[in-house]
Length: 148
Length: 78
Image 1 (cartoon, rainbow over the protein chains, first blue to last red):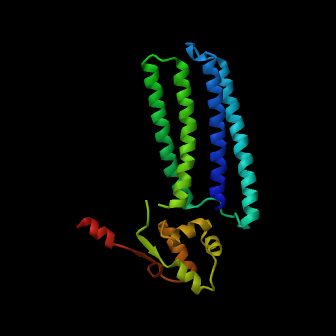
Image 2 (cartoon, chains in turn purple, red):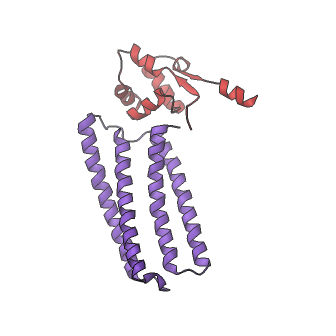
Image 3 (spheres, rainbow over the protein chains, first blue to last red):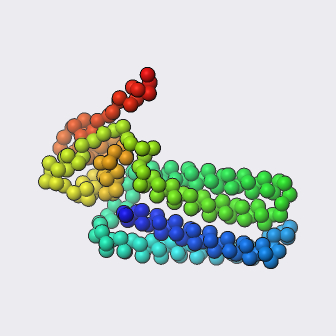
């Protein structure tokens, strides 16, 4: 597997871990009955900020580790980081990500419109962002392997 | 998705240039090795600029390395 592919897997893994950790937090809050509230407490904001910080750190760490391991294994010169094909793949994957986020946002607005608690809408938006990131990385991996 | 209609003889020209490696060619034209691999497999059609750079490395005309498969397009139009 090439270095860019390994890096993508590292980013995907960190996104999956972050989404998993956030899902656990949401389930805990749901069981505690937080979802019945008509307001969104500041805890949710703090949780998202922590999630972002952890995810960024994890992504950087994993990318460095994967890059070192791949370079040692393949002894490949990493002089060229991205080229025209990488940029095209990125554009196509971004388009998929935006679509996923758009669908999630629409669902969140529908949920709000039908009178469900604001926390459901809030979490739908958060999961749309996380889902869009994950699907974006999967698309990149797919395009890297399959070509276009 | 799938196979590109732009065909190329990059592999052949690499062979005739002292078995130039994909990495060497990638470095000379300023792309990653993965892009050269994808082009050789017919999975990626390079930009015109990249195609010219590759032709220049091998010191040949663009059409000698790259060709366009119009057969598929003709079948579609019929």
